[in-house]
Image 1 (cartoon, rainbow, N blue to C red):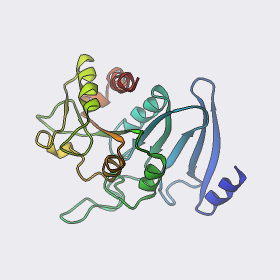
Image 2: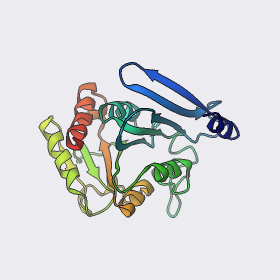
Image 3: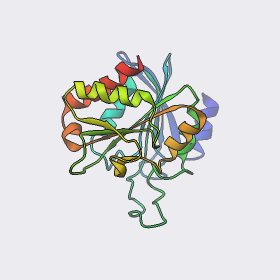
Image 4: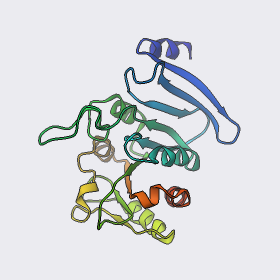
Length: 224
């Protein structure tokens, strides 16, 4: 522990122990001063856990996705929660041939990506929470970032529909704007044989605490 604290201090980060009588103990890696490096905050479960990684790449842009992330961390007994440390457009909006490095769901060379790679294996289920606004689209769109979604995405969508929302799965044709085909975490997870769940939620779902819980429950029930 002392070695970790010393190493983190060199990059202006600190390590804290978080004791939760309900959900268990966690190690929290965070900046010593807010908005200095903006590399994100990482919550690692200290006790027994399942091989599930939860990610929130746009906490300041996609409203209520941090709430999704925390609930999924607890409900799925995940090993870690990764929360990005900056607004996705802090370096400007994307343009042809260029993606802002502040967007963790586009930047393949970020610390967020490095932590993702370090903690993901071929047996890992990676849950990544997003929000979007798009007329004519379903309430929720699920994807693994490719035109070949894994079967669990279809089963999760079915559970979400049973909870009262319209949930669909990106298959390379439908709902292309939220297909996550440029997402580096999705690409890495597929490459090593893991399962990636890119989950986009319309405002009507994100703004309703009951529906947010139901969406997390749908994923947790499928993971078993």
